[in-house]
Image 1 (spheres, chains in turn cyan, orange):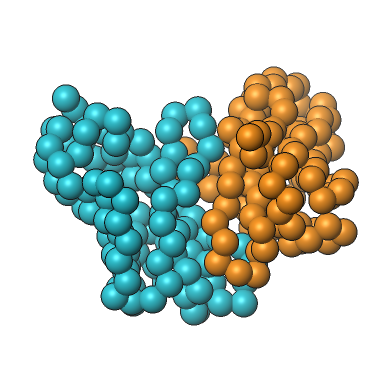
Image 2 (cartoon, one colour):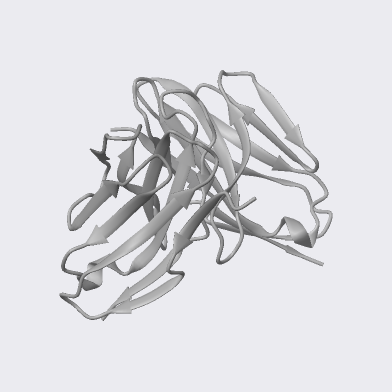
Length: 110
Length: 114
């Protein structure tokens, strides 16, 4: 069964304190791995797509990386506005839908 | 630039009542989806429509029906609501489900079934 697990469930950081969020996956064949950001009361918003092991993508203070078994979302010198829930999802080969992890709730204290 | 629009934003139902959640997108996307989001369980796919005229079951289809009314609109119907259907519902769309296209989400419908 295709499975996506995110850790930790919740993470509190001080402003400027860098860290990483983890997304581990077990799928029959990976077509793509997606990261989304979700603010309270809103729908998820797309951040990155990664397609193959070794690939990296960056956007402002966020960098996403991919290996054959997991993806990391690195956040460098975060600011309070980076507080949100970060969702990871995978698209499996031959499937037309995404499988989501349960998310990591990130809080950045000023 | 509306994107994906869902109505209503909030709804309270009594057990056994029926209702339809509406979703429309203005991006000329082919594929549309209905997800539910529950605490600690992530987003789970209820139904999807890869293209106009087709619909398929997702992970948790029981108790729901869908209609792809046209290319723009995809509705979700609860025929006889149950407390287990209390959740936040999201509609999403993408250009083509078969390719690695990102999903665009609506802002959600918070549904409580008493």
